[in-house]
Length: 134
Length: 114
Image 1: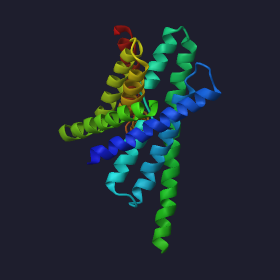
Image 2: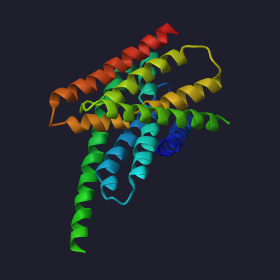
Image 3: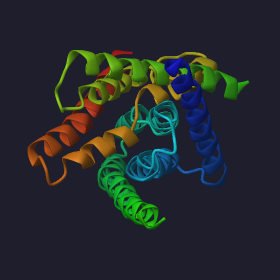
């Protein structure tokens, strides 16, 4: 049953990824893959935050944690689209664009994940100290 | 209709990724995230192959955006990389480099084999 929950949450995550892609594309028609970069950075932040705060509060069952983390956020972000977009940029002669995209993905991705982790940890410490008082 | 196609593909993509993670967990005790590395590299190869083939738009949506988009993941990869920070710089560098280098090479090979 857990597989079905992960699949369903994954379907929703992909839907949101697709909609954001279409949405950004309507405002920005350029060739730089901002939609993929945006979902990957948002998702990295969210997974860090959820894993280090919300999932540790034990308010959610392990099933919900797996469906939300592995299913929803896991499918919301994507690596294959990133790597193929990079290759297509190289193939079409946009070497600088490809280099810029990979660099942003590496450093901003790590930064987003780290921010989620830091803020999640801080939020969790406040949460546990409040629990201690009550 | 497009949305349904994306969602059906993603339903199976997320389950396949989860299943591979469970299998690896069962057979290996390694702290190295082999499962995520595997899905990201193989998914990059397959998507590279798919986009350079002349197939129906709906197939690209279902298999590319849906299935392979969900089969691979960026957020889990980054969180796993983060976990090595300050604890294991060798694995940190190896995992980061392996995913980007092998992922891009795989996408390139898929693209040119198609």
